[in-house]
Amino acid sequence: MMISVTFTASQNGIIRHKNTIPWENFNELRCDEFTRASCSRLLVLGRHSFEALKIKLECDLLVLSTTKTTSEGSIHFAASLAEAMEIGRAGGYQEMVISGGRQLLIEAMLLADVIYKSTILVEPMGNVYAPTIPTNFQLIWVRNYKGNPSHSYQTYTLDPYTKSKLSSTGLLKL
Figure (tube, helix red, strand yellow):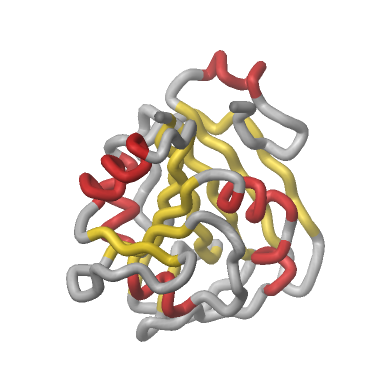
C-alpha cells in the first residue's frame, strides 16, 4: 500500500492557530486536486484536523483518536497510525492518504512515498507550524492558482523517476 501525506500550510509555515485553520480558502478545499488526493483513497486524519474541517468529505475516512473507537456512520476510528495502516491493508486500499495534525504529519512523513502540499499565499499568525519536508523528497510537480487568497499545489516524491507516473493534476496514478 502506498503511503501519501497531504497538508496545507500558509507561506510562513502555519497550519493552525488555537485549534483552528487561520485562513479561509474554500476554493482550495473544494478543488479537484484535494478531492482526488483524498477521497479516492483511504483518508486518515487526526481528530483535531477532522473537527476543524469546514466541508463534508464523502470518502472512506479514518480518524485517529484515543478516546473514540466506535464508528459513526461512514467515519471510522483508530487509536494509532499503526492501527490505521493495518485497517488500510486489510481493506485492500492501494493508497492511504494521511493528513494532520502536526505530530501525525511528522510520523507519517517517515513512512511516506509521496507528499502532496498545498501552500496558501497568506502569512497569518499561528501557533502550530507545518513540519519540514524531509530532504530525501524531491519536488516534481507544481501548479499555481490565482484567487483570494492565491494558493499553490506541490507534489514531492522519494523517487524522481515517478514523475512519469503523474497525472495532469500532480497525483500519482494508481
